[in-house]
Length: 114
Image (cartoon, rainbow, N blue to C red):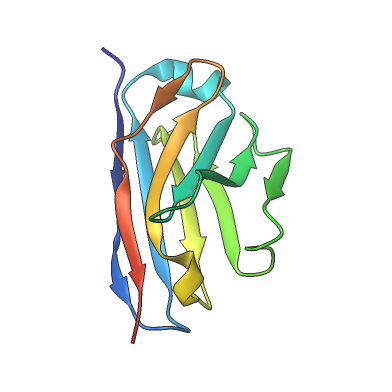
């Protein structure tokens, strides 16, 4: 089956940076728009960023604009989320998603605390 494998989560202090990766196990990745979601305890899942198949269209949630950068490398079949100036409210489980296929990664925990 097609798999989305996430990595890069961890614990950082406020103001720190962290990079997430999501590798997809199919060549079809080059055709897919991709999304990053996050879910904090007790809150609904939130769309963080989206990127089109050729990176021509990129969107961010207002809460992360100016701090997060989504990118992709189609040759590596990987989508990235670079997070900077992290805030405690950025804490949560981060998921990558292929929205047209309804596929999700397993999630990776990001904790921002002092």
